[in-house]
Amino acid sequence: MPLPGTVVDIRSFHKLPLKGQGVDAFDPAGVAGGALAVPTTPIIPSPLMTTVLRTTRALTSWITGRSAVEEYETVLSRGDREVPASVILPAGARRNLPGWVVLHGVTRPGRFHPTLLRFVRALASSKAAVLVPQIPEWVDLSLEPERTLPTVRAALDGLRSLPGTSDGPYGLIGFSFGAPQAMIAAAHQDVSEQLAGVVGFGSYFDVASMVRFQMTGRFDLGDATHRLRPDPYGRWIMGWNHLTSIPEYQNAQDVADALRRLAVEAGERRILAWDPSYDTLKEHLKGQVSEDHREIFDLFAPPSDREPAETEAERIAPLLTHAAMKSTPLLDPLPFLDRLEPPVQLIHGRNDRLIPYSETLRLEAAFPEGKSIDTTITALMDHSEQGGRLANIGKEISEGVKLLRTLGRLLGTVYL
Image (tube, rainbow, N blue to C red):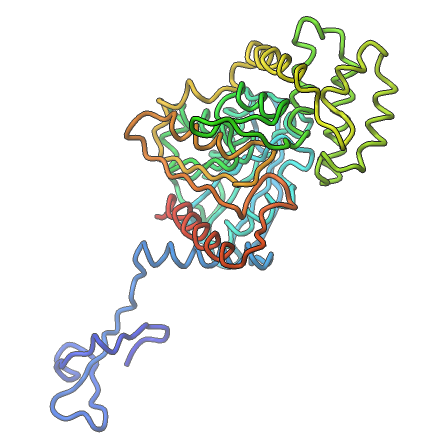
């Protein structure tokens, strides 16, 4: 008889010898001639079947918000300092689990951002180990890409040391600012040889196009230039980090500090940065900056019913780009793309107002010819927690199927 839990396919029944001739057999009533035997060896799931099962578990967790996982805190040695990290594991017995390192973006909640938490729990529900290192400088809203490589190295070491986790190769995922940083880290040989793939959610193509969109709402798609209202959070972050690197604004630290205060509020409230609820704070902060700096404050943080003055925004965008690139060259992923060996998956929300999806399409096109790139643009994801829903149920189903396939490919990256 079959072993408990053995999957039996009736199409695989054959006439086989009776017991004593090498197999366990039975002769059910109504079956004439000979005996039918059932193989007693458990069926081993194929890689495809395993990926399907993992995808189903992850998607169910993402949709319902419920995950059968265990979580705990650990500490990683980054070299210059120790940093906290979250470990998320599937509940129950664990053996030879595939592993993921996930980088958060530049946001106050960091690894505790609700959307990120939901994602990594869904990822762990697929029967994988997930490690999310905190990058304190990014939580402090400082654009310090030089922290990425030592953090990723420490996280990979930490992942490998987890009981029940495989020896790799692993997957590396970056969200928002963490997306291009994940690709830059993966371009280093010692990191690359430990990775099965790299995934970027909501990446940018280059600093110039990102800053231009943040300041003006303009972005290029194909041969045409388009315009959207940008999420002001992006320009608040850039202003806080690099406004005073522009020579004519080197004394405008009061404006930079005010922009950081706005970005902190937006990150902690988790309310879209263009919401009118920030107008009172804007007026208060504007009153605290020197009178001769209020015009530049208004450029970065106008009232919610206005956009930055177009001519001045067009003027300052290249100045801000130059200042950022001069002080922090590692913001630019483009010089590293031809050194990136692991397969790459790029995923972007069609309705993203912080970084437009055209950035991911341009990034895809910038990779060397023949590079393994899988790109998905979906209406079910963007940078904001409020976005990513569709009014048309037919389109929602279609987008859901697309996202399901993408998730399947993502999970298949580290199948062992």
